[in-house]
Amino acid sequence: MSNVLVRNHVRVLGEGDKTILFAHGFGCDQNMWRLITPFFEKNYQIVLFDHVGSGNSDLAAYDFQKYSTLHGYAQDVLEIIDVLKLKDVIFVGHSVSSMIGMLASIERPESFHKLVMIGPSPRYINEGDTYHGGFEKSDVLELFTMMEMNYLSWASFMAPLGMNNPEAPALTTELENSFTRSNPLITRQFAETTFLSDHRVDLGKTKVPALIMQCSDDSIVPLVVGNYLHEHMKNSTLYLMEAKGHYPHLSHPQETINCINDFLT
Image 1 (cartoon, rainbow, N blue to C red):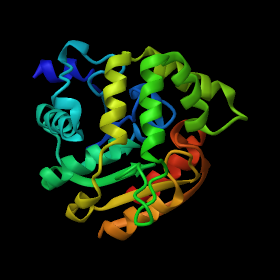
Image 2 (image 1 turned 45 degrees about the vertical axis):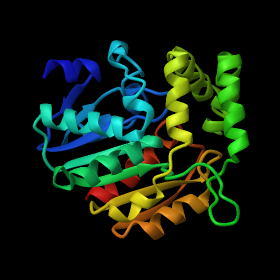
Image 3 (image 1 turned 135 degrees about the vertical axis):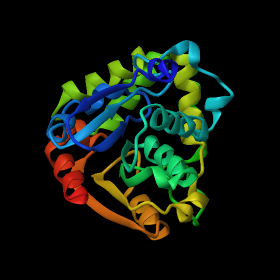
């Protein structure tokens, strides 16, 4: 039991009967939810954790084979649910964690009540005229090379691109620092697992009601991806946010809170 809680640096807060499980995105950790969770603590039990390889997780538990696919991370989510004996979980996932939560819910739908997906994408790479994910494969491979050649340069390039809120430079700096705190080898594999994944075929298998939160100007996930998800997920609601960038829970916390709360209530 304790191994799972230590492995993922699990923290439990809040007072409610219903549980919200927050899952951070690539290159981040559970601290990214600090502006969101206080609103929900009075009415919900809050579960926070770090993906293995991120934040204060147990780096010794990182397995390059297990985490070469998002299913490895989904398995961890289910183990956290089991250890804490959680039921009817409301899963809030940012970016790649949206897909991780979706995969976990497909494997065990009875454990989930609702999915909240912030900036989700089932596939980041374009495929000719048939699918627009936002990136050419050659661009993604160049980013991988940059990570290997000069990790700090990669972090300083990606942070402003992802945050996309130049009027709030402190948020960009925070994101860059989050990237640079991570183990470069692990982060490099997590990037590959994230950006080369393709879970479009899984969208139709999702039974749990889902909220898709799409930012209005997201350089990581273009608008058409939100529409694609909504079209292919039967029980989904699409919300187009006024927020710009890929991290609305940091840059636009109140809009993020309102959107989640409206969906839950």
